[in-house]
Every structure is written in C-alpha cells, then in structure tokens.
Image (cartoon, rainbow, N blue to C red; front, side, top):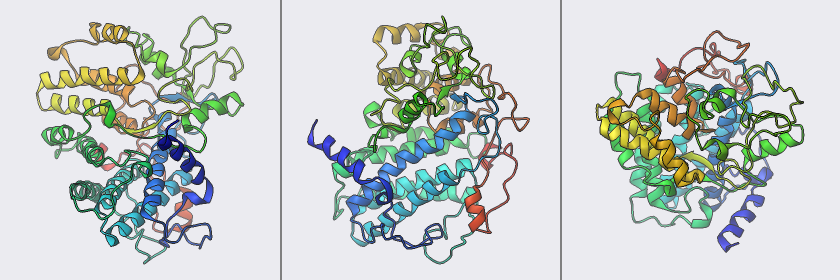
Length: 478
C-alpha cells in the first residue's frame, strides 16, 4: 500500500464522530457551542472534510431517491419510502447544511488567505449542494443561512438558488484558472480529485451541463449551451468526480453487509433487474453481473430476480435468503472500497447525446450514446467481447437515423445507477421508462415529484413552508 493510500485511510479514521464537523460559524442549524469543534481549522483539513462530506451526501440523497427510480425496493411490504409516503429527511437535510457551513467557512478562509484554489473548489461544492437542495425540496435557506444574522433564515426561491449555483460554478472556474493561489491544493487533502485543478474545472462544467440540461421542459432550454458545457467537462473515466475514503467501507457496501446481519435493505427492484436481464427489452445487459450477484441456485433457477416495489420480498424463502438479488459488495460500484461517484464521464456522454438529439444533430447524439455505453462498460470491467456484442445488438446499435430519446434515457438509467441525478432524469422524462409502474400501494395516485420539508427544520424555523403533496412538481419539472 503506497503512502498516499495509507494517509487517506488514516484520515478516514481521524474524521469519525465529532471531528467530522469543523464549522466555525454560528449559524441557524448550529445553535450550541460544541467543544469538539475545531475553532480555526487549517485549509487543508477543511478541504478533506468538505470533499468527504460531498461524496457522502451524494450517497445519502441517493439512498432515498433510489427507491423513487426503482433501482432498489424494500423487502418489507408497504415500506414508507418505497410507497411514496411522507418520510422525515431531517438527517439528510442537516447533513447537507452542515457540509454547506463547512464549505462556506472554507471559502471565507480561502479569501482571507489569498488561496484562490480553495475558493474555487468551495464554490463548486457549494453549487453541488445547492442543487441537491433545490432538486429535492425546492425553496430553501441560503442567503441568510451562513452570515450569523438570524437563527430563522428565510427561504430563497428555488429559481434564485439555481441562478446562484450557476454563478458559483462560473466563479469557481475563474478562481481555479488563476495562477497566484498563495496555498495550492494538496493531493492528500482533496478526497475527490487529489488536488488536480484541471479535473475540478471539468467537474464544474459537468455540473453546469447537468443544470442547463435540467431545464429541458422550459422555453429557456438551450441545447447548444449544454453542449458547450459538455465540451469543457470530463474527458474520460479518469476524470470522474468520486470519493473513496470511508471510516469502514462504502455506504452501499455497508447496506449489503447489514443485510447479512438481518438489518434488511438494498434489494434491487424488479423494474431495474428486468431492465437489464432481457425481460423488458429482450437484450441481456452484461453489466447486470457486474452490478449484483446471482440468486442462490438452491432457491431459484432464475439467476436474477428483482423485488417488486411496494410488495416486499416475495420468496418463497425467508427474505434473508438470496432468492432475490441485492446490492453487491463484489461490484466495482458498490464494493467495500468502491468510490462514491458524484458525476461521471459516462453520464456526460448521455447529457451530450440528449442535447445533441434535441439540437437536431443525430450523428453527434449517436456517437455520444455509443461512447457513453462503452465508457460505463469499461468502468465496470465488462470484457470487450461482451461489450461489443451488446453494442452490436440491433436493439442497441440502432444507427444515428433510428436513435430516439427513449433509447438515450433507457441507457442513461443504467449509467446513473444509485446516483442522485437519476431522479432528476426520471422526472424530466416523466417516468416513461418501459414497463415502469407505480409501486404497489402507492400513497399518491401519480409518480412522486418532490420530498417533504424535514420535521427538524419546521420545528426550529417558522419560515419553513408547509409541505405540498409529494406529487407537486418543482419549478423545472413543469
């Protein structure tokens, strides 16, 4: 094990518990002085904390939304998240805002110390967290949340937060393009890009491409602006923004580990499994065997069986037996040491494919579509022969003239497995994936469009709006 890896593992253990929180500002969600908080942490420690929290918050959100896009399903019938019931996401909301507080402090310290590299990275991570908020809750505190002026900040309109996130990305790119940062990024402290400024700039453009593509339903949508952002974004799988430093293991792997200890979770949805196993499309996707482990042949002759959303594990065995499939600790995506992927090159190729298709450039759209599948299969270690057989299948390799948005969304759905961005796509696409149905016993009559404001926020901040029904669309989904 090299010294960098040793340092990163040691760092993970140093960041357990209270030491994870380094925020020095007294804001509305940090009401009491905590003696365990470091009052004036150095920039390198702040960078380690904020980059780790960014990765963990990406997973934390996806742990909920992966039910909504039916990557996973509860083994228990009528599970609240599985069936669109109002669930309290106070823990997720607080984790995002605590990370934003740390990011805010890092930016202020970076400005004070002339460390433009840190200011740039802070802006990019703040923009990412703002998008997590506005993509799931809509209006939210921001302009008054970090300046110590109030314990009950107002809620800024989501459209204003979208504009602010875009501004932060542009500002972050400008800061990272400077060459006079008094304190450079250090490899061992940056848990996402190892101190590589070029990759951070490309990630900022990837976030811009996501944001510009998110408004595809609005008259302001500009596919050419999306393509410009894509051109400046991630250039290969090596550019992927991911985080792989954990106290014990990747949180998805922890869910799989917990399942073996009867803390049940992480069962793959019938919808997702059928998407891959040939049931829905008549094509077996070789990525399936790199995503999950087959069922135990003692219990089933079918190697890949998913769990229906809302129904729970259908057996006939006890739901601790592997007669249906679940998140695998053997997958490159969810192994113990697998990185949490925040945004990937493969995803960017599908953003490009969609934008080029909408712009009328079928040749570019098709080339990006093929490149996206190829990149994702390469990332999962699919052998070349299996990869090429899939790409050459007439249902997949349809040619530029026959490419459709349905095919683009169908393949992107696989690429964004367990990523929070998948729920943005599902809503933009109006859940039109083949054979996609409401979970059994859904609490609302249509697909879910938003989450409820957390009880913890409502209890301490009277400015918290009343939560609308979960079928109400956010501003970019109309």
